[in-house]
Length: 296
Image (cartoon, rainbow, N blue to C red; front, side, top):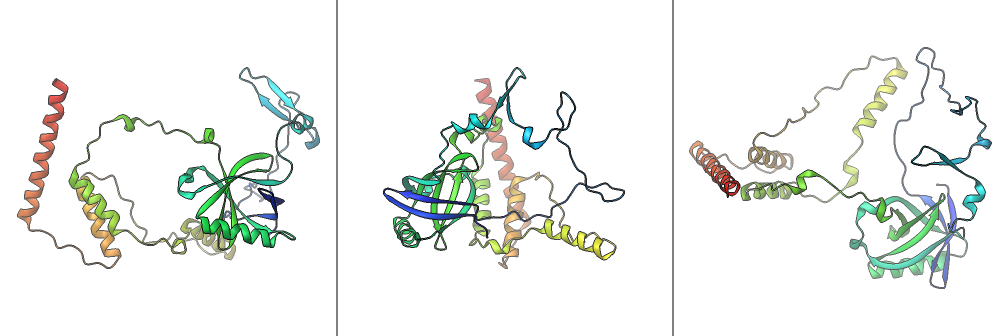
């Protein structure tokens, strides 16, 4: 790994020099835009929309568009006076329980390695933070952007997780939240049973990107000059459930089979009919209650 930033953790009067590394990388099959006939790469020119001339990179500035359509041009001198920290510090603001921070705030993860003589204070803060069971809330400036972040320990290394600001989190505004949707106790019990049946310790190594693997196989087949054959045996996508209880019950049985558990024996036809009759009567009662409320 290559360090992308050097700075220091500022913790009270203690300064810990560190190097910062990207903790994650996006695994994807990348493509270039090419000419279909000869495979030539497609290039783009930076062209001014007013005079139609190509513009050199050195002559390009940042512009902010107003509601009127007018453009405010900002120069490098304008940015120099902004209160963005240039001290390359990770300032510890407070310590808080990790469960108080909603994961929706997290943006990107970085590893921190002690730099120079920072080994001892690094290990000291790491040990103290692990013992406290909390995370450090910090402020840091990376790539011309100031962010809140958290410091936590993973596998003996500090992980810096940059965060979004509160006004960057959208508020869900969906119509169904205002609707009075009834959930029957039997449906809730069956859904809880499905969750219990599918409970397991999370092991990320059990999952993989099947789309990327299939795409890589297509590319390898193209290189080898072989005929590309569509994979067979794919599971059919389930359509929308007509009977919610039946779909939940079938899901529970399928989950049990996948885990090697014996399926629950089917009840006699009369019992099933009785159950269906009871559900129908409950639905009719609920319908009558809704109509009486509307008439009132």
